[in-house]
Length: 551
Image 1 (cartoon, helix red, strand yellow):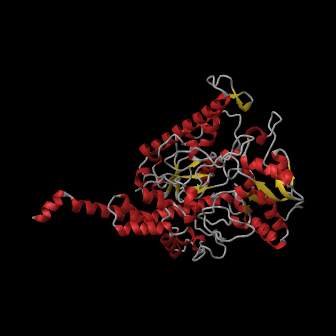
Image 2 (image 1 turned 180 degrees about the vertical axis):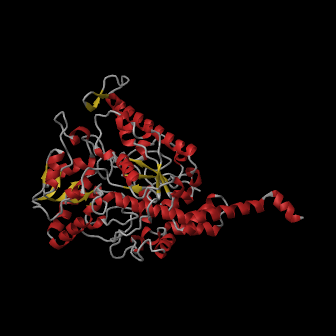
Image 3 (image 1 turned 180 degrees about the horizontal axis):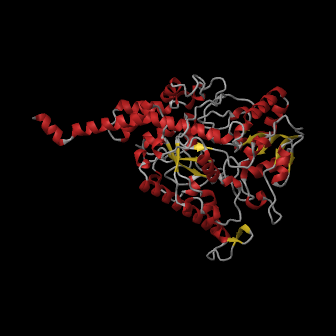
């Protein structure tokens, strides 16, 4: 079983080392919804313990095909036949190594994503009306959470609240649960998490630890604070799932495979449900902002250290992000469509903006206080190799945003996760993001095909010293630079939490959900046939049946 699970969840052969045992969640075949129908049937057979050698071989073969060649291949052909997806346009149709594929090189470089090579975004996915049921949970799970006091609660952690309010008013909301294809469990985990870790914060400063923190020293107390928040939100998640299981019939019909919840904190369920076991989730999928395929992802180290980057001790038996199941979104921001700034709308006088360190209340800066491997290395690199026209310095958020409106490239190194709010802010303000991803999925890239390589410059973290060379190469190639800016301008509208225009992020989330609902509908008959066949085989193998056949 372990071999089958590993093979079924690995995306591409060149990512085997990166996944390193991280994608272990999703026991059974509902955990990997986007395999083909034939692979799904073989998987069910294997899980139930009666697969033939050819069944297993076919499953392994289908699982090891590259993303660009096979991802839910059979199901997509059916969707195209039903005209729900335009023929031959879906990004999975791109042949690996072909034009616009992950094998491409040059200015955009490799984002290190697991989303396959593609350039055509699928903007024409049909979104039906009335297919998402929103559970009416007791107020302790949402409305009462909004009243919890917090000293520090950035808007980026309100994804759960804004999506809940959106689905309540959206045409995709089902009039009755009986007609729904998907089921949303609305729990406000972002504010709940922040409320609990701030229980030992000084009045007026969420980051200052109180003296009565169980008599602990500062560092152990910090760990205790986070564990307290993780345990509290884990309990709330389990209570919500148990309430749905016991109060409604829909969860048990699919083990929760058609149910979803929003995990709005940095490491998604690894922050907000860390104390739970895999079986507590069932086959629940999530909407979240965390898309790291490296599984462990916290690049913070001591201020003078050069320790291991991208390490975070998450759960050992399930993953924070399942690339074939979970839906990724940018962190929430209040920017609307009217605040989008075209790359060509302003004079961009700064070649390379480096605004990833900021002053703290005690006069020190974030990096000097806490350290941050890649951020500190970039600061040190700039001090000795400042690019002509570049700008590094400590500025407020407001000043940084104004500078972004007048910069060509914006350096966006990792924060607590590989991406940060800075990436999405740069896109909206017309500045080409320079990222340092190492095997990281981004919103709407894997299933919808957002072509990030067209308007982002990614550099592997270990190659940060290539920053000046890569940026200079583009600045010295006006045609290539303009094409990147044109692509950025074309896709900016998709990164706003705004119903204006085409609906931005809300619209793309609904398209991903529509694809998920269709896949579930197509796979369900296969699962039923597989279970029926299993029952027949068991019946034939029963002692009573064998005795009757001898008579």
